[in-house]
Length: 97
Length: 361
Image (tube, rainbow over all chains, first blue to last red):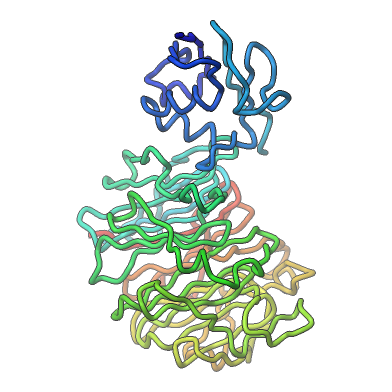
């Protein structure tokens, strides 16, 4: 089964995503997760995914990821399962000074 | 002569250019919003390679390299420095980028937080964890200082590539004499003012160590309370505080050549991290740390309540050597006469974390 997911990015990350803010991703596995999505995208846009998660696979502290509007940290984190036509939104949190 | 002054700040990298070290042209910020705490200007290579270790609060740490004097930059896909998956750790910040000896032009060392050492064999593009230090049985005892648990100093031996010294806060000084296969603490004589056992083998909060350019066994150490010297490559340390107004501080450097000197920027105390009496005081030792004397002409002598961080006091390799210091209030000061007098080179930058200078071909 192919699960189609849309990854939406902030404009500041477009330059490491081939100039795009929206990536359409197809995953040929049942119940794909946010981690699966990032693994797949990393194969094409490694500089992008490095900005989103650490080398051990944790979402960076000030990166928020929403799956169909819900913060994945309030669900299963990067193990959150993505449904058909899910929209995954990446937003930088408020940080810095 | 063209001198490049690279200034790493809390919000990016600024580059200064000068042919006479009196007038400077500035550009930047490069890597805007990344805290650039580690810099290296690798003059062993042609063209010269500029390396910057930055940490963006959102997007994490990475090494950026430039072979065209900062006009364009390369970032490796993995950020250059990353722990292997079985290490169970993530790089928080890159604290040090240090080219290896001249005989190994592709070797670059990196110190990071959490305390770990990485080595590059491709001129700083990619790095590999030095396992023996990461797996050291002392590592569980290393504790973070106020700045984080960081390995902030790497001193390759100039003629023996198998010998490398590192320093960390906390943990202290460790050395290898077999190219990183094994590491031993090297803190004998360096006190630990914040632990019951002040003469423990390791656990010191060493702030910076600098090697003499003429005698590789002569080293100067700014400790968390105490300035020390070693004449035996770090096997033992003796206090070297005569003439200093205070023994706490971070910034330490050594101008190159037989007529060079060590320079320090003392702060009042660990519980009062300000210049002594609000005065920007640089101290110079021309005798290997036996005695220090004031070398602050031209620096503010009152109302100076900012500090110089551990890698924000540096030198170039001109003759006479230039000395540069950056402050947390965004100023850079320079001396082109061996510390005889100082001038402000730039102001109103973000907090200065790191300064490096080089004479370019």
